Structure formats: structure tokens, C-alpha cells
Length: 441
Image (tube, rainbow, N blue to C red; front, side, top):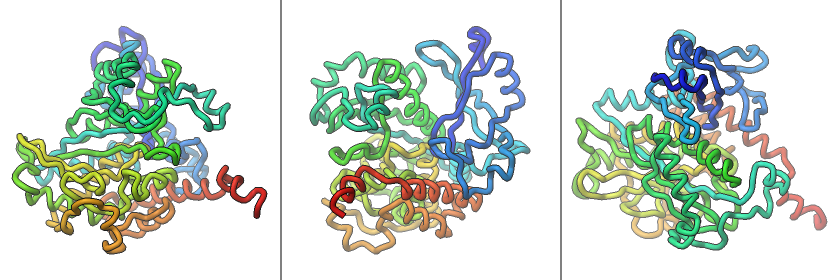
């Protein structure tokens, strides 16, 4: 670590919880020195509550019965970067076991384990995320005052890939690209998508763990960048049924001795087996890439999001898209995750499935040409995605593949957290229910 904290007198650190929300704090320079040497402790309630800080009633890892002790964490020295507008040092942390081992529930260490499994077979991952998000001319107070209704987007109309909108709002577009570059999470492309005020950002590809680090930081610090300018962004999977959902697609290739094993004519063996693993396992792993109630409002037919484990070559209607190319650019795009996914868990699930496919030489079904939605009716039932988070969680909990890939403790805790999320939704009276039943029933 350099002397940035000494100059400033303080630093910021953040650790991702099970939902990918960054939990952290400012620390003094003296405190930072101690954390760098010995690690620290962070209240383990972050494993025992949801995104609204409401405590789960169904988990064993932490809770009233444990007294909410500190969970150990370590700072990642190589993660040091500086907040572009203040110069404040920022560090990524990850949770650890009491004896210094990896924490069984920490999303970042779950990904690191999968990457270690790949390395045991001589493989490394190169990856990048791309996100769609809506931007509004609102602030955290106004969206609540309006009960999240009738929000004003920063631009009206459907202007996909619009040069007009991007040029007219160049200070925001260029400002965000500069900010992200300065914060060491560079964007390689930023454009308007179809919908009022929706943008899409493609993060530059890099090594697997760093790619997920950048994605987690991008989601939080894009929001902070925009809020400091009187705007607000949402990364919900589906904020309105009037518009397509917001994706969080994951692109990756696997390397051996710096050579892309997906490179070659047609679809090489390694790529085909990786696709076989994804087609076979993604329905089991679905809550890790579609983790919220809202995720399933996006995964509907005809809405640019997949509803079954399909694949195709350069086919954007399929769940898995193989992208040919030249010069080792061939890679796989998993189009299942929404923008609401925890990047660490998205990468964990996708890479674990692909690796198992390669290890076991799992052959996928033939690629789908044309409309994958139209082809789904003829697919085996086990390849269809569950329609709700509750259904997906039941399959996740009961599948032997999930325990084999991620361990019993993680599977049990994560499944319980998704069960809680489902129960929280089911006990609410929604606007839809009021409008449908209030008078007529």
C-alpha cells in the first residue's frame, strides 16, 4: 500500500455482502496500517440481513443466537485505487475464517475458489461485465416522496444507440467514462439503450477476479457519481413493465498459457463443453444469477432475456451466445444475469458450470438458429428456467450439483436468504393487487 492514506489521513474500504451490496467505512491512516498487517473485524450481521437491513429469521450462520460477533476480514492491498474526485484511497476487503482460511459465505472468496479450481487444470479466466441501467432526473428523497412512481428520466423516448442523446448529455457520458477510468474500472463502451433514460456500459475485460471487483465497484460508484450530480440510477432487473429489463451480461473466455482455448474454427471442443456445462447447470444455479423477486419479471419471452437454457452462435435470443472472432477474441456471453445480480456470484456460477462442462466433456444440444423463444416448447423440462425466485430456490437447494460446486454451508445459507426474500414479497399488498381487487372483487 502506498502512502495515500498518510497524505489524506483516512481511507475508505468496502466488502460485498451476499446481495453484492458494498458495506464499508472510512478509517484513519493509523487504523489502516493495522488492518493491512492484521486484518480486522466487521459485524457479521451483514450475513444475517437483507438489502433493507432486516434480519433473516431462518439462518444459522449468524443471528440473535450467536450474538452477532465480528467476522474477520482482510484488505486486498493490490486493490488500492483512489476516488477520482477526492483522491481518497479505497480498498476492497474480503471476509475470512477465524484461522485465516476463506469464509464459506463470502461471495468474493467463493469466486476465488472457483478460479483456483480452474487454475488446477491450467486454466485462467478473462472476463467482463456489461450493464444496462436507467438514469432519472430525481434524487434519493424525491423517488421516495413519489413512491417510485411517475419518475422523470433524464431523456424521453426510445433512443437506442442515439448519438443525439449521448452528444446532448456529453458532460455526463464523458464524465462517467473519465471517472471510471480514473477509478481503475475502465468502460470500453457507453451508449443509450432503448427506453427513456437507459444507458448501457461495457466494462473492459480483465482477469476473472478483477473483472468482478470492477463490476461491484461500478454498480455502487456509478450511483454515487450520478447522485452527486442530482441524478439517480437503478440497476433493478425490471423497473417498469413498459420497458425491456436491465441486463448484467457476463462475457468470458478461458486461457491456457496465455492462449484462448475457445479460439479456433467453428466452436472448438473446450468452448462446446463449456457451453454444455452452462446449458446443463444454469437451471440449477439460477438464483445465483437471478437473485431477486424482480429478476423474474425480466426473464419472460420476447423481452430480450432468456427463459430456458439455450445456446446459439451469435444469437441474442439464446441464454448462451458463442461469439466467433479473430485473433483469439472468441468468447462466451451468458445472457441470463440481470443488472441486479451480485457480480461475484454471477461469475462464480457461470465459471463453475463452464469448468464442470469441460472437465466432464458435457456435450450441449445442437445450437439454436433463429428465435430461441419459439424453440423452447420442444426442449426438455429440466432446461426451462424456474418462473419465480421461490421455484428457483427450491431447485437450487435440492440439486446435488450446487452442493458439489459451492459447499453445503453456502448453499444452505444462500437458499435460506432467497427463501426469506420470497416470503418478504409474498406478505406485501402491492399496487397491482389494490388496482385489481379493491372495488370489483
